[in-house]
Amino acid sequence: MIDFFYRYLTDPRATLTEFKTPPRYAVLVVLILSSISMVSLLTPFLVLELFLQGVFLAVVLMVETIVVDFIAQLFGKKAQSLRTFKWFCVALIPTLMSVPISVIVLSSPFLGGTLTLVMVLWVFYLKFLSLRLLYEVSLGRAILIYLFPFLSLMGFIAVVLLSMLGVTLASLSLG
Image 1: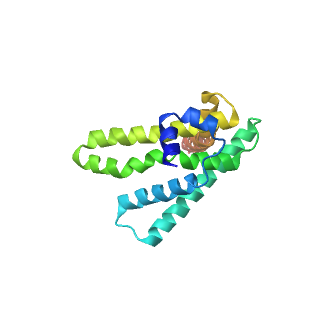
Image 2 (image 1 turned 120 degrees about the horizontal axis):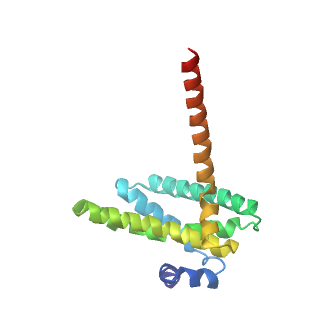
Image 3 (image 1 turned 90 degrees about the horizontal axis):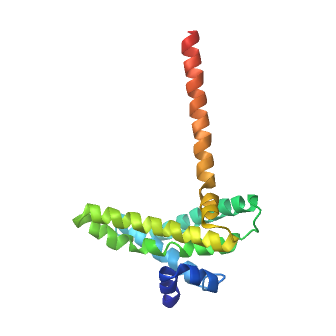
């Protein structure tokens, strides 16, 4: 399994092409290790906190997967929820570096912040690449499928705020 993780981090495209789904326990290992790294950043962790963090992380990934798969189906692609969930979980491998990065942040905030940004961008790249190969779309369309719910929500909020501003300005001019 370590060989799989190494190959995925060094050549994700070839790994995604070769493996249709991640190895059997890879998803569980990444979820557990990501939960440990996230909890250990906060406090010395308890078993209950670790369990709750793992459940929370799994639920967030499930919701993210369901929404992304729904949007992909709106674009006319075949449903692939389970495979998408598994690859999204495996895409969290770079977050395991958050504990060493937090130590670097204490000594050099700029370097730690830069490494954190690289880690987050790497996770997004792995997710975009997973979508690209699972749904057989271009990288641009994969990014659009992933960001569409966020962009829609931002557009909705902008429309609500602009309409509130319009109503406010109209009421000021009448009053």
